[in-house]
Length: 583
Image 1: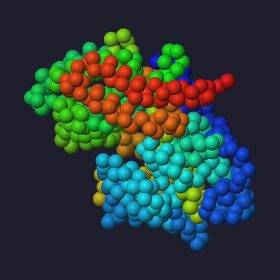
Image 2 (image 1 turned 135 degrees about the vertical axis):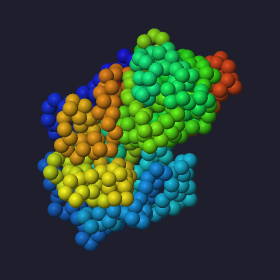
Image 3 (image 1 turned 135 degrees about the horizontal axis):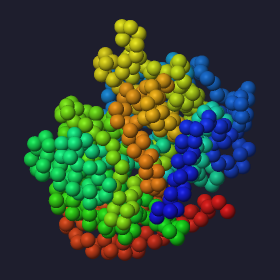
Image 4 (image 1 turned 180 degrees about the vertical axis):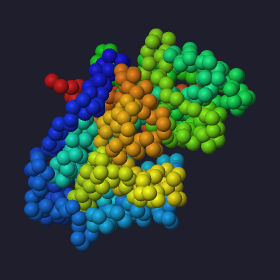
């Protein structure tokens, strides 16, 4: 798996960090692939009835005089949307997702009124369920919706209820947004239908969910333990944490390794996918084989060895007894409570959730460590694409261009503002920053009433992100540079003291991140069989780990997977993969 994947990922690494050495060059003028014939104007290609005939803007950002695009709309225009609210999201001053400092900002600054059709706290896939009910019952779709669930996004695109967005992007997106999108032109691939771009990828930070291990350094020091370089080393650390606990916890109180796999073995925090990586595969994604074809990682022979390892760890009490019932957020609870010694996850966990451990155990210290290798020297973790969902625009939206007014402002002022610029020290006073009596900025708990995560208030998740911006800022901080830009200050103040070091630890293993190599739309067999195949996979893997099935059941699972649509799906995936290769 490694050789072919390394070549792709090294290219992505260069793209993500090239600006560390040279100033960024201008990106692709269009930021992505062409949309079919390209003669249809962005406004008239919607069924909204807009009568603008404008073509794509010129390279200097100018737009035709008859363009409906405005920097501020007077009278205001309305964008309708729906929300899946993060259960951890908080509000202050009596605000809600429907009416808050960000919605008021949009109206006052841009002349855009954000109207909420409905909102739901997003637990147990509540947002996905409500969107599906909305689609099935023929309800009016929101003008703009950002979707994180991959299958839901494809179903919405294929429903015919949403318009193409490529001509809009070419015409109205500013250069900073286009350059950010051009860092990886493949971000468009999943949302292309018949040559048209049907959804706008929501850009995320590079490496945002690539794993390392967070380990209680105070426990390591008191026990005189060395950094675990292999899985065998890691087992010795877990054994010591459990039976010689430095905080005096009894073995039944300690969770040496906090992981869970309630819904998946491959997610953004607290999963065991890196254990599979130690045996040459990553589960629940398409990996490149030595033959140059794509293979579903969960049927690789290495997955069987990983399951044997996880079963042994559960039998020894190294992982939670209820790991099969734990999702990502649940795995963080024992770490915050001070009873877990190790948790796998992203480089930013020093800020959340691990910073809260000190509230329960003041002397607790978490440090980042590299991913350990397996018996053959292999190490692997799932890699992160530069996206975190997709934004769709309804065919009935009356003002689709208004989304670009909104996002252009955020890419210009929020994504990576220069020192001394408008949002240099923070965005909303009293929310993500405040000023003390001397006029100096304060953050976090020093804000009267506490800080809130205003980045989840934006119309598009997290507002605007340039994929390589955060890692570049972190590396500057790791090298001892004093924070100057807003992004550097935000990282220092909100992301925890170990985050810059974690970035360096992460990049010390650049060749072990394996992204899902399939980025196209669902194949016909995926639409029919993937949910079922994932269900039997999750059930089989969990039952093997819990000893309810023998390890030999893995071989029967592979046979069943192949005969139940897996072989056909693999064929379709590789046909797509052949078409994407440079000729």
